[in-house]
Length: 195
Image (cartoon, rainbow, N blue to C red; front, side):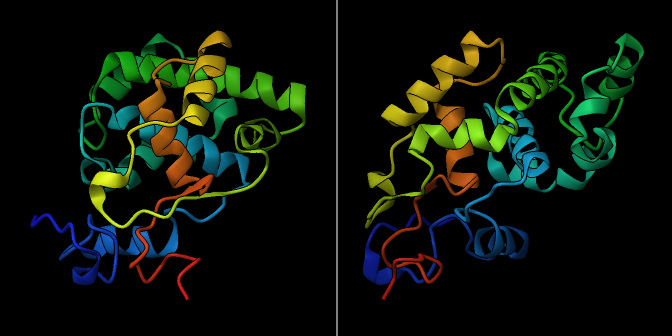
């Protein structure tokens, strides 16, 4: 993929050229404020599995993940047993990483605990951006940070609550996906701030 750095050369963000599935995700999901708990959990799972991999790798297996993980039903995932873990380890439609599979089960349990405490995971997680989208105004790829003070705080708090695979970089990717931050470049046609 050709790297584009000049704002005059882009009409969309840098990571979608020539890939219809990536473009659809960029145009219809990435950076759009999300307040549905099941979808928030889905992004939490997918971003954890992305660690060390490309988003394209995960996106192309998304339907496999949905099927393997009961459409991201955290109540079902929270009670997966060892037999289910081993079954998932044989499923070629997902990333077969045992630590990430086990983390998904653990994270589902803690996700449910947060729902009970705050009424919804949405109410809890959006506190890290003051309940609103943080709009960045980046012109180039190199401007976009891998983490932020907000993702640092989110990571620290989630880890305190027992979540796994929630480092600051993963949390920042989650914030981008859930629209907690708007990192569409200034020249991107999908930037909600574009005149």
